[in-house]
Image (cartoon, rainbow over all chains, first blue to last red; front, side):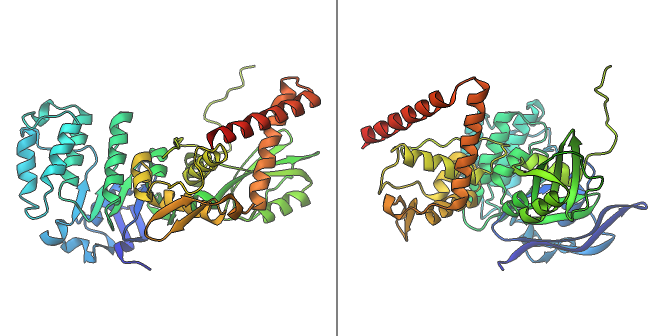
Length: 307
Length: 134
């Protein structure tokens, strides 16, 4: 097992009497790009803020780069790049001033060439004031400021929120640029699953503050599977096959989403229940995530039957 | 590299599998010949904007199928066709794709003989093109 750079043990945070993060045990090994997934309000930002030492856990603990998050020394912080949600920057500063300001925290490791190249690539100039930048440009500056110190660990809280497709792609390129240098570790939250699939090799899913998955991308992609089963006559009244998380039916077809099930168990069950055909269909990561965290409800939100 | 890989974001097919398929196609079409070198994992990862582990996984699968061979220190090369193995799972995939094509042909009202003739013609064109590349 490789070195663990990010760890939580029983990490819990209550806001009043409501748990935002509930007994989370997480281990992120060095060198991976981890997509941190969860629906709105699942507790991602709270968890990240605790990891960065900005919020005190109600219970449990967390550490980054082997150091308890509540006691991160400036030396440890120098090794971490942190991008907050919304890319907040000092509005009254010019880009060049921001650079000087940020650089002072990383005197020995600032890659001035990388910073200048990125600013030029983004078609920005150092004389521009932050208050005159668009959301996308602010995100670009924030990315350049975070990558220039060449961080060992990069933590980004929904960095591509609200960005256009071209700037999102630049973010992904930045991530890939960083990981193609050896042993960099990245944790980023995002709601854009197609982006996550491109750059992440590890996935953490939290739901209502609870950890629901912590595995490699490949494991997640193969663990959640959909089967389309055709029945000759009647559909079985009950889907009593272990691992089923979601089930829909229409006419003589039934669609079952399974977690960690072997194809054989499902096809055997289907055969016993009178099925004539049982087919495994590939799912997108987005569909997998939706069915994993938000199984279809019985009732419909909208009723499409007009007559 | 004489191969153009296009990643479809958010597809059903996992990204490593998209890379494997496209390299297989390029080899079949003769765009990548025996002994030709594939780009380094990190290089291809940067170009495609995907995780390097995903590219590495694709190369491993190709290697297991005998499509490519890795020479330590110098890179990954297209292997001699004699080294290729055929996996029963791959043959299943082939059968499924044929089913899809047959289904589409029935939709279009193409009869059995015409479909078989069409298939033969395509195979001939494909083989001719491959010879042309060499």
